[in-house]
Image (tube, helix red, strand yellow):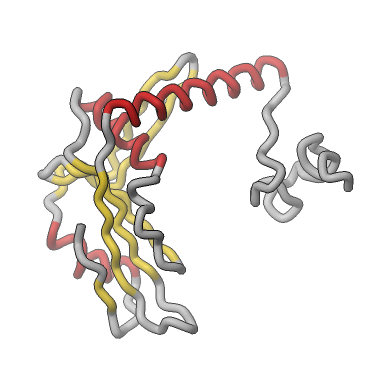
Length: 177
């Protein structure tokens, strides 16, 4: 991927994209929506950009530096690989996260960090199996009204982020509150 670059002005993510990323990509698809059926549920992926080198790009704005292996570990990029394969009959040549890290009080300069990765057929197969399992759980939940709980230590399972937390058996009740 592109080297990390530090900027002396704050720059907006749009300006950084226009000056740093856009000159290096030739789009063939922008915000491409791919819907693939999965055991009674559809998986919808909307990739930010597919370039003429068959790389699927996802653009991110963050307040903190991304980890060095964020693209390698991204389930989202695995989903994009599956969607690209479904739409075009072949996996992409690469998948990439393109980060624009905003300046902060402690780091007054923002920077850009692009990370490319690839996915093999086994990785996509494992992700699809997981997606099918989640789709099956969702279908079961809709039919029975019984839904799996979020992990007890999940940020999503808290009074701050979930409107149902007070009365959900997986929320306050599970925490003894």
